[in-house]
Length: 111
Image 1: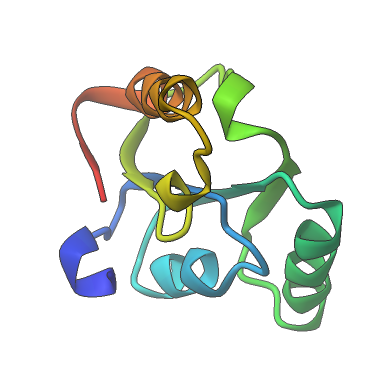
Image 2: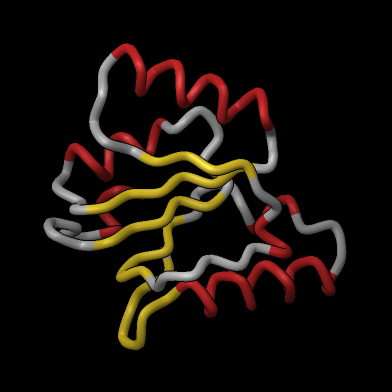
């Protein structure tokens, strides 16, 4: 997955359905200038924030449902290792894809 993300140096990245932040932190370590992790689970975000407190990298985490996500800024890369598989219906999948498209800067990438 990280290889698919490519060179993230200096880029703004959002990691959707980030879980405990494994990929979020890895993307930051690979040079992402700004990284935001979003997950529906308060418990997963709690684990991610605990790791950020132990080893700070400057990662921002938010609790949120990607299907209704409205981020005020745009990102160069939307990363989602474990998102689309959670769609239970075609409508949920469409909502997720719309949120991804809304979060992307023109010319940005979705991995």
